Image (cartoon, rainbow, N blue to C red):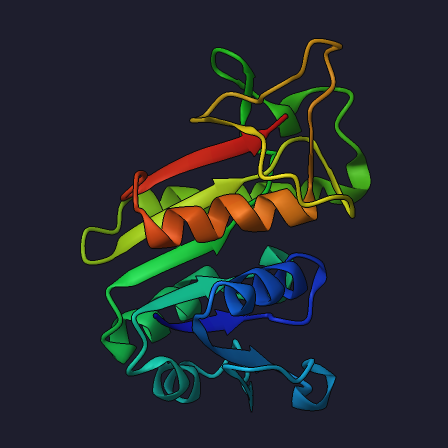
Length: 203
């Protein structure tokens, strides 16, 4: 497929770029600094601004799907959504956060006392973006939340999927490698199972 990847040099975006390229997809890597995009077969680097609706829409046009891997505090959800819709691309996948996942019915992770204050603004804005998507009927969107801890690690391809509840392993730890997160998102891209839904991935 032809995929537009916004934020392709970030922590998650770089893993997504590698996973997409390894599976033979044609990727347009949309970033602020194109020279930072690793060269590879099927990868085209383009400079883009997430706050420039018209410019971004022009870069997205003609792709089969758009993947957004940008920080919520560094972008405006309304602008991103408007650009995707203006581009005419019907499929939109979003790299989400864990903060809006429920730890118990009705209680979100970012509402707990243990949630780190340094990540609170990003987490709440991610939750607001998800709420915005839920009211969007014109796009086939998917929002993938990681587990509470996401860090560099191995690509194992072995993980569990969930919906709106935080996943934990047998030791009570909630974690996923950035590499396996990328596997789960590209799996969803290739074989959609969560149309207009949020889902989560963890060990």
